[in-house]
Length: 144
Image (cartoon, rainbow, N blue to C red; front, top):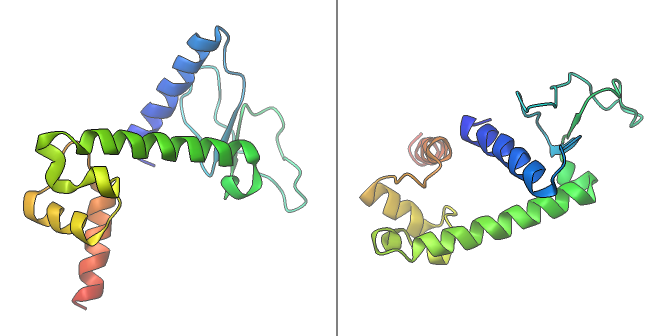
């Protein structure tokens, strides 16, 4: 997982604790643990085939395909996507970023957006690891 994502999760937990005026006691997360969250130790526990949790002392529960198994994770995923799409739309209206058409494609790898990346390069808003992986896979499939 990207370090930026981990930092964002930790910052979100910290900000939520401030706004709620109480400490976050448990994280329910889609697929991965967040290391080094203050007060929430990472656990090695897993959900067994029968659905039981091996170590109930953990303060984080990572569920593979959690958005399919948990209404809370699914709702959070929808909220995050809507927020991100809105943010990309706003950023995309700035004159310097109009050429990437984020107001239209929200940063998804449409043909138009891929062509803009190839022509103009990456910005600080691009997810560099995703772009590198995508283009590496794209080019290797186009030119075997």
